[in-house]
Length: 408
Ligand SMILES: Cc1cc2nc3c(=O)[nH]c(=O)nc-3n(C[C@H](O)[C@H](O)[C@H](O)COP(=O)(O)OP(=O)(O)OC[C@H]3O[C@@H](n4cnc5c(N)ncnc54)[C@H](O)[C@@H]3O)c2cc1C
Image 1 (cartoon, protein in one colour):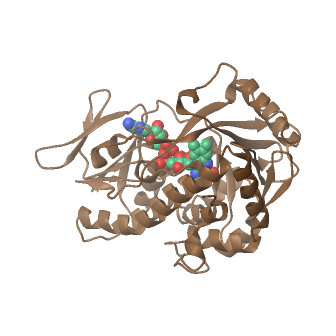
Image 2 (cartoon, protein in one colour):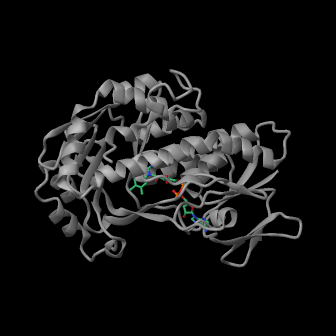
Image 3 (tube, helix red, strand yellow):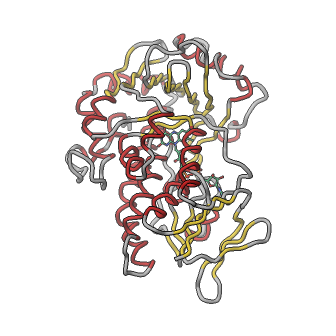
């Protein structure tokens, strides 16, 4: 079977690797001329590590990644608001959590794709998909070329997915009311005391920083803003520095250790869950199918899960594509829709602009039971995967992490 994959991001490359392991010969088409080098980092939680191990990537991720054992929350004045025992989460789920720079993750995926003989064609921007006279999808590229594989996988992200437009008729992402500035701080000396995730909560503002090594920390600063103000300014370094100047010293230290021209502004969008992820011989995966907000912490992890499940659905399948797509969607839609909703709930609490609401949110976070928080997360994140501790994911509050911060 000829398989074409639009998009060489985390979803496209991990799907390609998973399908190659099953004996297929996928080909990846990526719009960028060269591999992406921008962007900050991602936290790969234990459910992602399960997939990374299955794909044979875990050792390389271990070599480039950090192993955080704790997540600490504080308010903007530095008062502790509890946290998450990541070591306990890892032990409960049976797999480690890794923190990695995006470009390093991308390098590992591309390296494995090359070793597996998967062709990745750069500079191939898909502009449209249409059906031919036989009801088969044809993807057209900017340069006038087109492909007509037996199976076309749309892994072309959340912002303007050509595949989503073909499948759902609409690919408009939804702005969720806040911006992220992302950056990577680097220094020859330690910027943080330990390899941990630190999350600072203000009123309508947030600063999260994630250590990979003591001298290598990626971060995301965030602020509630209307869309018409969600545009980059000439000096974003100064802007972010000023915005967080009165916050705990760690925040300023990390901003100062970030190269001036390396801060990127993202107007944060997500996508409405879809009822169907396929049309004809086209299937959506990753953000193109189910982009959650970064506050879910699960976008890349779910892209990796898609790869693992899709390979299993295709493995030795005697059914036609329609049945395979149906089986894939039945497994994947409930979990990804729930995580997307939790990301929104969490964001509403985090970016509330009313100080009384934020005070209540902080009190709740402080009072939350750390062991139960781990159980809730583990139940939700291992759902559908053969990971230690069961598979139903419904025993503890339906794995509803968002409920910890529900403020409405
Ligand atoms: C600030 C921030 C922090 C995040 N932190 C985390 C985290 O800690 N943990 C986590 O799990 N997730 C996190 N995420 C989410 C995660 O980054 C995404 O869910 C993940 O990148 C999705 O992978 P993807 O391959 O589906 O999409 P993308 O990574 O967007 O890749 C899509 C690829 O398709 C290509 N493409 C697009 N259009 C076309 C076209 N027309 N033709 C050909 N190619 C095309 C793009 O160039 C790109 O390479 C975060 C997101 C943000 C914004």
